[in-house]
Image (tube, rainbow, N blue to C red):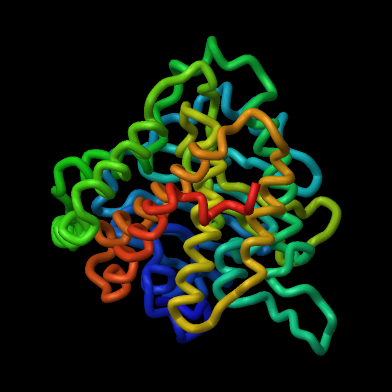
Length: 352
């Protein structure tokens, strides 16, 4: 698994990640503009620093992406603006079509990248490291929780939900889980997962996925693919330079627990991969607590968030197998998922 350090990535975190984690990136100069490009068969991310200091992030569909990007609903643009503040902005693309989306930001690194490599903080300079709840990522996650709640609740949604598809991660994961067909190493990993988890755990994983996709009276507008790789941290934090959540291309409808569980599951995946690499990071659960405390009590079901955390980790493993290919670390996701399923995902959450 990954030790999250430069040159140490030996897992799905760091060997060509399915989001903008940044490992394996290449750098070049294009007309005087520094660029980084990295990606998978699902999506390619390009980061370009423009002459005026703006950092432009672009997502393009990969060769195995299952569908064109849908238009960003006008309602989502309005909702994203209402949910933003001076410290964190849900940004919709400045340009978008069926193949690409582009956002302007003040940063060149995602929150996931900071957790993978650190941010240069050390005990000697007295600054908080990336795992610290009061550090840059922890502070951002508390704000993310608070503003995500506004995204979920700011406006009546009944009249607009028909404009939104289900969450894209779930709609590509469920058919694979049920049928086993995939690209690259998808079919092989499904066989490994199915034969090792056993029928009861596999049935529970299907049940968790169906729970997230099942329509309820609590359905609302979701970010749809809320990951730390889609959150751009400012290079020079300060007024007018918020963290930016790249938003809009995956806007979806569903239970709020889907967005919440996606962040909870990602942090749990970081924690467990670090433990397996014998480089434990005991402060990471504090980031989960900061995020959930920011979101606040009420309006979400703990059991469904726990289920969402498990499905998020399984979806990341699916995406790696199907859009990157085989890697030995995929073997480690099987016992990880087995343990999470045996606890109904509750080990990903702080004690109630």
